[in-house]
Image: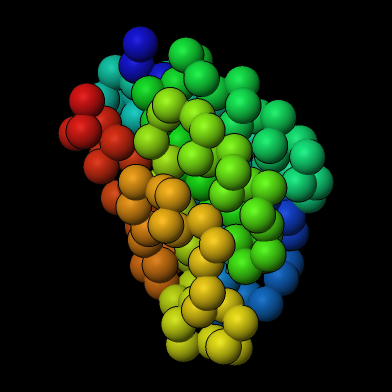
Length: 143
Ligand code: DQA
C-alpha cells in the first residue's frame, strides 16, 4: 500500500485570503497540488481532505486504518483544544505528522501547546508549504 492522506483542519480552506502576513499567499489547492506532484514522483497516491468540523476529521482518521501508510495533518486550531483528535490519533495505526505553516511558538502563548504532538510520529512547524513536503518525504522514507 503506497497511499498518503493529506488532512487539513478548520479555516485552512481560507488560505490565501486569511492573515496572509502569517500564512503566505498560497491557497489550499496550491498545497494539495504541490504534495500530489511530490507523492506521485515517489510512486505514492495522495488523498486530500479538509474540514471545518472536528467530527469529520475524526471520521477520516478512523477510516485511515488499513487505507493509508501515513497521514500529513494540519489540525489548525484543534491542535490546541482537541482531546478527541488526540484519542483518535493514538487509536489508529498509520503514523501521523502534525504540520503547522506558521511558527506557533512565535505567536500567542496558547498556540505553543499542542495536545496532539505527544501522540504524533513527528511535528513540523514554521516552514510554510515546505513543512507539508518534508512530512510527505518523512512518511515515504519511513516505509
Ligand atoms: C496553524 C496554526 C494554528 O494555531 C492556527 O489555529 C491555524 C493554522 C498553522 O498552520 O500555522 O489555523 O495550524
